[in-house]
Length: 360
Image 1 (cartoon, helix red, strand yellow):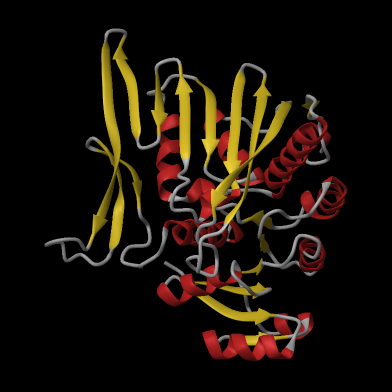
Image 2 (image 1 turned 135 degrees about the vertical axis):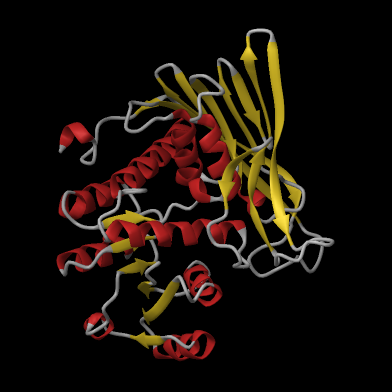
């Protein structure tokens, strides 16, 4: 398997995922160089990761021989770098979303969408349990899937999962929503556990997206990402069965139900000496998901990001698109409409945008 060599534009919490993955799986990935704006940041990144760091795009790209560049910068800057790299013929794996608003998404797609090698690092569909659920939803066991209720991630992340479960691409959506605010004891965050008890407001968005005869429900509060007391919830329904969390039920025939758990298989516990990682996810005797990065010690989100890196490596060598600029633009567009529907208390209907197949 050929090693994937990539560069990173940007730094911070999300960029560190790519650096950790390359450090953990050096035989698969190499984070060859970085581009940052400030010299003190460059010095810190060199010391922390042992990576060549540049402050100028020309120097960053000169003689680099990179397979692609990861763009991990703020929303408003992301399209600037995507367009510049595309103009130079450099493949791009961009963090989400690729632009902050509809005008930015449209301008970016009209500039690079038809020709450039651009994919977007939406990782939720590649997290192991979600990937296993998507496989099950598409297997036919549940019949035609008509409903997905997703309470695992905010905005465009959650909408991307809804589209995956429902098999929806760019179909018209009628969107309504509301926001509910309630008190919660503040929990952990990116900086670690809380230092004292603090009561704060928790904001919950509940959004309904109707794609004809299919329904998506996005229900999320930002506390869920780190909270000890707000867990994710997920329901996928078809006419022959459903998935609720880690349990699936379907009809083998009209009077014979099958009920099984999606069982995560971990290594490194008790007498298991295969290393501290996990093998995959089983449904009965069927592997719904097999971890492709054993023996790497990666979190589920790191496995998902590593999957994006691996798929990007295949893509630039002639493989298939896996989460295109068009898909990323559609998910963020629907998210923007959802926020509008909440703010205005009305139903909003999506329209064909520049990235719609019929508009190309």
